[in-house]
Image (cartoon, rainbow, N blue to C red):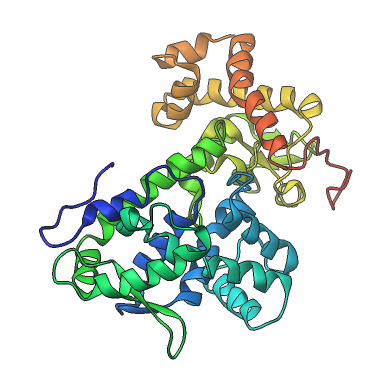
Length: 377
């Protein structure tokens, strides 16, 4: 998605140019925050502090929950991580909680507030720079904001090629979306959001080149879908009777087991069956988002997976093996039944092992070993 809906009366090319040669994330999140506000509030006048707070809330999950890197020079990502470190907000906080916390910081005199305010003094103005690229050529950086504010006010009143918004200062610092632009944004809200997210995924991927499932890590995660995994393992339980937990060696039955993501869900952000193993609820809770010690657990994990795949293949349940068809690149149930343990282990290891290293580099605690009820080492 590399273009915006055209308009006969609006300079859409300038809006599109705001996303050219992007070196940090603020342009994406500023525009997404404007679109979200229009969607929820349907007003043209938007307080800048509300937009900045919404930006930070939108960056919260990629940085504080999924631990994605925004790059060393990206101040928005760094500020969001700092707010997470300075507060008691959990990593899975709701958007409204984060917005309220940011606004509370802005009522204080603190270093965190100063960092947030620095976004307010920079982001709203520089987003409009493409609208006045020619006029700003050669202007000292210290003068750019005031020039943009002046030119935005003048261009706002034009019938042709108006600026996206102008700045107002009373009763609080805000932007006022031009009426024609407001109608354009409302009419094309979903397309514009998709355009922005598509470009944002590309930006984040550049800073996290080997991290899986980037697009699912930019927003608050939806409810996990473990229905297929539960059905898969119930077939195995029907055949085996009991299954031994690979971490604690506790025996589990078909009526009493939970499902653990061997690679933490917060890293993979998917429910593919080759990464899911049964475990008692207390063990699953103890493991949390840690990376298990592969030297101690990988063979046990592989053995349990291999046995379950064989059983499900013998029971002629191809729908439950779709993830394994993709993993192993086999074409029939007979291939699973004849597959050796060594071949299965190699394919599973080739998929999981590199991701372990990436997750460790991102800060996920590694070499976790179950030691008892509290899961401590």
